[in-house]
Image (cartoon, rainbow, N blue to C red; front, side):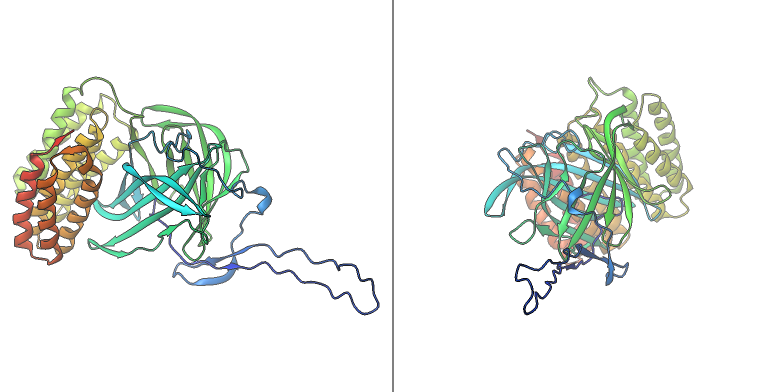
Length: 456
């Protein structure tokens, strides 16, 4: 499940309720003695270091929770709840900042389903791929599994989590799956009402979140205009912190974070924000300008970078008048300023990569997800020689991880994927061995294979 700072990971301990029976005593009334009320559930706070403390989280009483009944699933992968329209939204791009760095996510509905057995029954779930990039580089990947109950509520049945560091999977903390021991978790009620409480994650010793609905029927400023029917919630995390979130029809999770802190918000969603007709010529001009900036920074030509950046600025100003989603406009402006202010080759290349990512995101306004993802494959293949030249094995591994994620969701939608499969296999082997010359050769083969792909 996406969040501005990624998945909050820690260990928790649930204290068992205690019931103390009073001794009836000899010669006294032999009727059952009264008992003290059961102690409230205690979910222990976990501090920033990951240590479980003796302090209990201020969780809501069961009387306020709406997620205690066992859901029935007849058509679980038809997820049409307006505030969590998982089967209706192909891809959502989110942007923001975490720890002062640009933060961007791609949330994509994958083909196929995943069966999960819980409480003796097997439920098919929709698969959502969540990929987070911090400062343009892969940061976290998750495969989330959702199902809609017959009453319209949406349930979270688990996730595979992969946290990256220096291009490698550092850990898989936060991974969980519904089972006989771990309950499925409601992530959206059928009809949220103020005061509703539910737990989107409720896996002992792994993850915990509790949500309270604070406002309903709100209007929020969306990528393509105002969106009505949104809700605002407050989420309690295992470390005792709270975070505000907004969910909006046609998007699902719309924004997360608190003022002055980390922030993540929807940049656009498709098909929700798709525009009809061909893209204006200004979009094509921006594509050309972004590609030239990328090429100029990759070749480390000082004057060439300045000229390309200047042309990019002009192309962006011309396109801006055509109406750009606010979150995307803000991020592109920030990255163009970073490019113009770069004082070294590395920072210029990093800004150019983010600009290229932003430009590809904008294509979603007029192009299919599969076509944009093919362009993303080509972008990451072009980035490989840049990071080989920088002699940075960590960045190379990050490039390969990003390629893997895009290919994971793209391979089913193209004709004759075998050539890319073969090139990807060679690339992974070379990158794992940190054989950078071999990576360079594999990148050339991959670029050729990707150029030959055709969407079905």
